[in-house]
Image (cartoon, rainbow, N blue to C red):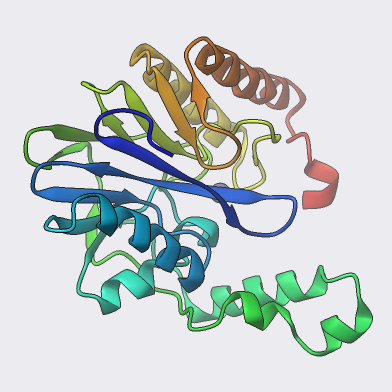
Amino acid sequence: MRLSQRCYAVTGLGYSAPWFVNAGFLVGDNVTLIVDTGGNTMAAQTIYGYASAVRPQNTLRVINTEKHFDHIGGNGFFRAKGVDVWGHRGIVRTAEEFTAEIAEFNNGIPDAVRRAKGEARAFFIDTEVTNPNRPIDEDTVFDLGGCIATILLTPGHTDTNLSVWLPEDGVLYCGDCLINAYLPNLDAGTVADWKVWLESLDRVEALQPAFVVAGHGPVAAGEDVARVIGKVRGVLQEAITHGHSPTWQKAK
Ligand SMILES: [Zn+2]
């Protein structure tokens, strides 16, 4: 969906039900910046199709908002096309971790026959773990031609989280720093990380975005942005008070 003159969201990409994951792209005069690559190569193909259709002459560039596989699974598709993938220096995932992710998917299949057939592999056809080839570890800016995108480190959900902000369009792509309609996933961190996450929320709130493309859930617009930020902040504050995440029994 088109959000503004230069910004688009690609919503509803498949992941572990009921979770879907979002991606998006910003179209400058020279560069189209793709934010996240979905969970697998099929998602990357979809993102690529939309992103390259809007301004086909542009150079493509990818940035990952974090290290979890639902945001980087399509990286290999783009690297195979010679597209640079930027992301936090801490995104260093291994083939063993990826194999464990596929096994977890497979264990979640309710039907025993399908589970025995290993149907989770179908979701990850032609998908291999591929880390960013352009690591960053501080705030930076990308000149896309006619507009400047700001990359802001917004850690907390993981220590690799970052957000992409286009001030002139008021559009923020924030990965899982914000989540809409789902409970945020706090299980990748500790109380110390959740306090850092609160600081990141203050940071994105101060931008006063008109649109927020969260990592998961519908795009938030207008007054809904404050509600989404407030919801995640409330969950974090409660978790800090109690010393455990809302889903801690599952995480244990
Ligand atoms: Zn995610």
